Each structure stands twice: as structure tokens, then as C-alpha cells.
Length: 374
Image (cartoon, rainbow, N blue to C red; front, side, top):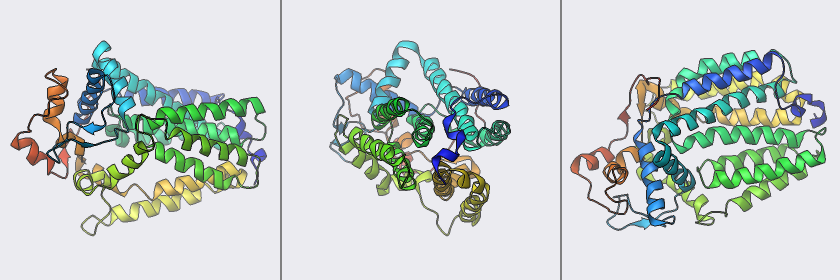
């Protein structure tokens, strides 16, 4: 199993029927994201972005939270997204944010089919099959396509995987490898300052570095991991932006509020435990041909198995149409006051309803998300 056996790793743009499938996937993802701005967390990020603009700097304390009487030290690991999204909202309106999200999703849809085309050694059937699978998954995934920084966590991993496949390929020229490595390093600087999923990007790179052992791709993957680690400190908070992102997920308060972050418990249906096992087993069977063809395919198969055994919390969130949102209930009054222009640095006491809402583990969302803008 060597990288030079994977001719699919050398192609970037799908051709023929797979090209049509990639563009169809892009259109489908664009339309899937075309719904009005309604998520409470989206307005929270807008409020934080407006605060950055009003202060002229990125604050080092949380001026919105009511967990403790005094503002606590806080490394906002999504400050870049907050700042950019507020500028777009302030100058161009809500539709600009929705359209930007839709275009980002279109890029994701195209890249997913392109990645399947590479893994399948440019087989023309790869495009239509990948498109079919994505269309089946879109209705379930659509409720996650809100105007939030998690969109970054969807698009950037796809770009990273495409870039890594270029580094793995023996037929890639030295100059192209150099530009790819530089581009992935710059991408990670943006990623670190926009969403905490940049830690997942490092995990992906480390995993592919392990599988690159005794291949020409090893030194390039080591270089990529080194660039990612260096990029992690290129923030207003230094390394704290990474450590705070980890602590944010591990905090007991959030794990009680956000249903997606809670682990499986005996109170949950057994299918939530069995489903990931079935998915992982199915992935192992499905990726055997890909894993045999190239070292990149083997590493990708390992990544898919890891992803298959981790969706229990998300399945719980989907069940019954319930989605937990810590941010959506912990600071709504401060957010809405900020967006309304009543002062971003005013820590007004939250009313009893908001405080009671913060103790809810989940909240109901619309069962049907309408199409359109606004």
C-alpha cells in the first residue's frame, strides 16, 4: 500500500459524470442552507462581534454570562467569526449572512463529491453514488446548517482532507506540495480564530501523519502538524484559545445544558448505543477497497471509523426534534439588548424567565425549517 498506487489522489476536479454530480451536490447544499436567520445562538455571536467593534479590541473577560457575579476570564475562540459576521450583518443585513452560509455549504457539497472521486480512483460511478448518499443525509443534517461558526467546522475539514490527499500523492510536483502546505497552514490560522473545531483539524493531521510512516508523505505531514501547532498560538489569547475551547466542552454546566455534549446513559434508548456500532461496522466493510488501494485511503478509513462511533449525542439531539443550546438560554437578554443597540458592555440582570431557561437541558425547535431568506 503506497501513495503512488492511488491515482485518484492526484486529481482535484471531478470529470465527466462525477463533475455533474459535484455541481449538483453544491446546488443541493446551497438550497439546504437557504432558510431565515432565526437561531438564538446566531444572535449571540452577532452580539459578541458588535462588542468587539464597539470596544475596538477582543475582550479578555465574558461580559455577557451570569454564571458568576463578576466577569470571568474568557478566551473567545470564535472571535474571528463573531467579528466578521457582525460586520456583514451591520453593513449588508441578515440576507448576506444567510447567503454566505449557503455558498460555504455549496463548497462543502462540491468537495465531498470531489473527495469521493479521488478515493474511488476517478471511477465515474463515485460521483453519482456520493451524490445519492448526500441527498439522503441532507434532510436530517439540515437543522444543523444554521448561521453559526460550526459551518467553519464543516467546510474546513473537507478542505484539509483534499489538501492532505495532495501531500500524500507521489505524482504531485514539489512546487504544488509547497503551496498546498502553505495554504493549509494559513487555513489553520483562520480556523483557530473562528471555531474550536480547529482541534479536530489537528487530530486529522496527526492521524494521517501516523499512517504516512515510511512514505514520502511523512515529512510533509510532519510539517503540516508543525504549522498547525504554530498557528494555534496566532491568536489574541495565545495558546489559551485552545485550552479554553477544551475546557468549554468539559465544563459540567455546559454538559448539562447542551444535549449534544452529553454522553450516552442507561436512560437513553439502546438504539443510540447500537447505531454507532452498526455504522462503524458498515464503514469497515465499505472502505476495504479504498483502504487497500492507498495509504491515504487506509488513513481515511480509520478516520471514518472514529467518526462513526462518536455520533450518539447528536442522535439523541435529533430524536424528538430536540436540540440543546447552552448559549441560546444562558445569555439571551444581554444578547438582544446588545443587538438592539442598548450597549454591548452593559451587564444587565437577566430576568427570572431567562434564569429558569438556563436550567433547561434542552429546548424545542421548529420541526419544519422554512425555505427562504430573511
